[in-house]
Length: 593
Image (cartoon, rainbow, N blue to C red):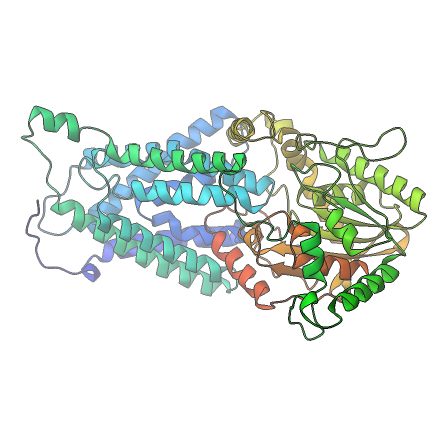
């Protein structure tokens, strides 16, 4: 049912506009002083209740103190959040209509915040995990969980008896409006001066105020049900809003399980067959157009000649391919081996080497290694390959393998390495580090450990998941990565150079899938990075990326197929920063690369 409301306008609610815009600007100004990289989350400080709860929970998860300290913070933030929500609701309430009692509104807003925190904790744990080990898949899982839950609770704390009502469409639309405004603002805040960033933050605060006004009008029109029959009470007293939010969580978990079992497959690697990959790689013409080699006269001969030229140019180095997490040894290097006939191409084995010095065949569950041990194992296999081939070694690493390369170069910089190719590289790992050594296990770390166990249980990797990897990355991953960045120099072809011990230059190239832009820090991409339209992982089997890798190893210049991918990645990175963990430290490298 609806009630007649007096005619009025949004702009008459000056107190609402002042608090909503001013509150966002205050947080933005404070973050400018202490954590400029986190300014993109500031507009959410005065968002509608469920969205603001996600904002608060991420800040709570950045805490690295004891459980008792965390509990005290939870209580303090809960009281402040409920009080701010009540104030915004009262300021947005239509004039001439009796407003809910302050005490009742406070309890309603506090209950919504607690419920949202509980339901959103898996999504926030995933985003915390992304800050420790940045790659896109956890974020792509957390994002729909977060958005679905805050939408299911979009009327929470405002509408009477919100827990037993599904959200009205208008409530969802107002929330999505605030969400869209915060996302667009985050995409530009990182590129603006302090004054410009605060102005944009104020505009998003104005959008938040309008969303609060819309929710207040909606709540003022909704009557309680004082004279319901017994069957109606049994039906309408069910917690429909929490059930809907739980269904969102269950749906995402179910989809993840189906992806692990292979029931649902995504085109991660469009070309995984070795022969098909080699065919596509050889089909690139001098003008940049792609044709099937067998469809034009002399195509097969030209393809063979190009392969021979690549092989002769690359014979100065052997190649070690280091797969990512879940990879098995030793067939993943076949596609690159087919591209470089006559070149020794080995695949790294996470299980180590046999007594005869050959990589041990291993399954997908053998790669949960601490980074120092992983770096040492890669170094050992580089030495063996160098000794057997008599050539320096080019390392092609993907995903987790790039972490091992960082560790290897930091721990043993004198290796006979000629070049490094990083596919789906893990960029700026350990943005939030493990506090275990100083304070004992924190709440965020405990949640990440539990989630890792859960994911490991429904995946092929076993109940331990990636525990050893996560722990070591949180403690030393940032140090190894920063050490690599400190030694990165100018361009070499389309890549760059790493200055190893003794001043020896090592050529490098990074190929980043566009999906991973959601985890990249808000920094300009260096010249040696190529962005391709792909998901994380499997790039060495991609018919577009494989020719780039072989060309780079052959010493040729590599040019991206679409220059616009870099700009798209930077925009996506900025927009996604609004929904990642706040960047409390400067993660942008000082060196180019």
